Amino acid sequence: MSAHTSTNSDRSKSFLDLPPELRNQVYEDVAELECAGKRVKIDRRGRITVPQNVLGAVCRQTKEEYTAIYEDYLQQHVTSFVAHVEDFRLTPLESRLEQLFPTPPSAAPESKKRELVVYIAFDDACSEPFIEGLLHWLKACMSSELLAAFDRTYYVEFDWSCFEADDADWLQGSVQDQVQAHRGEEDYVRIMHAMVDAVGEQEGAQEVLRVKHRQKMRGSRGW
Image 1 (cartoon, rainbow, N blue to C red):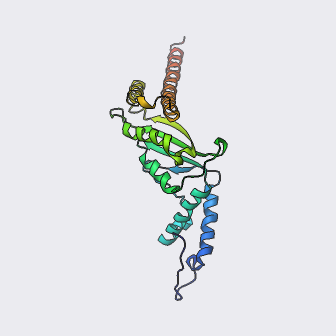
Image 2: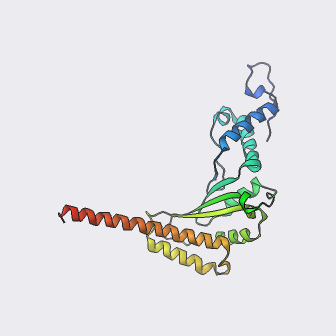
Image 3: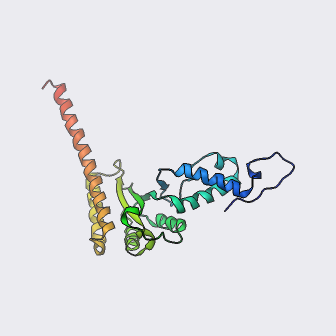
């Protein structure tokens, strides 16, 4: 939605009285400032958080006009995205990327690919992993021209208030058993490594706490 002309001779002049092309130029300048050197965030529902600024707070029209220009700017200029995903529910992320890039970006050498960092969160140790979402994503990574334009990196986060390390190990084993056909594929390997790293970091943190506790106990006993 580009800016359109607002006419009302009975009120004071405002930003909306500027010609549409001037308003669009302001929106583009603000979008450039908002995106400079930043990763654009995509949430678990596939929504992009448009930065909150005065343009979005003036009225519905400026918010809609700015949002349209902002998303167009993302498509043309932004090269780094960070996405948050819950339990392999990757379809909202894929849908958002398809909306942003209806025409897949041109093939680029590895050094010039767009960056996509995906954080996969597991919040419930009692639920089965959403394998269908992972399977669909892995197939898309092998066949999609759009995803091929991104250098994809994965991190896994467990809610350690719900998970024990054994729970996370079980979940990883369950995933491996159900995604046998994709073993060896690049994205499968990266996701499995991210799961292993997340468990290892937690076990390392727990060991540090155990050591500190033992040292504290020894100190209190005068050893």
